[in-house]
Image (cartoon, rainbow, N blue to C red; front, side, top):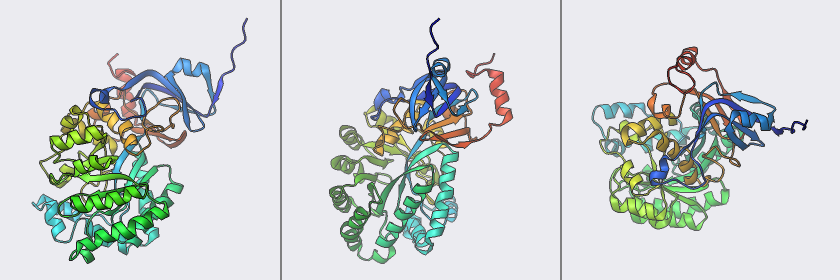
Length: 442
């Protein structure tokens, strides 16, 4: 009788999943490939040293590994940790009064012209102590985690002085040191022209180019530089100056592009080889084709037009069909989208953009991770990748866009550590039991 082979050690075994649903690879998916998701049924995942060492049917995984800890998915679905590729999480006060103003017909530009909008958040951040900003950010990171987000891109941009932009980035670094959510920090000193420079905006562009960017580069506190490219903020020429300087200092580039008008931000992003062009509600075919040719990811924010009460939305299907890599994000910020839920974003991407569940999942994981330069280790559930996982109390990945209004996250794993775990509601368990683990009635 041959001896039973010794099982390999694992730190964590995630088991009992009706589905493990994941895109694959380490480069962004485009066109029809955006909808290619691998589904493992009756599956398990083995994790060691923070990385995935195996994923497949549970019987095979159990026969191969012995784990020091197990996490039961209870017939739910496991997906990669969501990657939110566009957020503004460092701010002091909220701006619900502006939301009310828009219900009465005021536009984003009307509010900005009256000194509100971004400049209202600038006044709040400049008045807030460092400790308050950090405490608020940590609470927001908790909320991201509770909703299944394991990585965010986080922008400065509410300081608009060298001192306060560095403060925002320092607060991110302090939070990153103690919180499970991974932060990809972006310098957004060119978010708006502050009140003290409105009479001579060119002087502020000089300040960003010649003082802020070198100081931020020397600090090592940011990976990327972003510019809000719009007629009322930074035009094409000023944006090009800032972004070229940033690129020369080693920053990757991101742009708020063609959100409120067709200014040419998408074409500028393509020209400069940016990692992402974000929003794109007004992008035209020439801009889309330029993005596709340059391989620039379109980071789309489907809930923002709802918040701003705008009829125009990003032409997601056209971008996908023309071969642009598409990612999804919340654009969490105090003014134009006070939302931290990537599951809600996926649902709205299906409703507004007609994206399938598989397309939305890929856009919110692999493509988003690639836009942050993290595609080789994040965004999929494959051997060798970081074990960033979300256990959802849903029977299959189609529920990601089908079911609204309930947080279905039961557990979150970041780099192989279970950082959130909670019991699913008994009523939901009962509904799933009645239908069977595959979501069909027995």
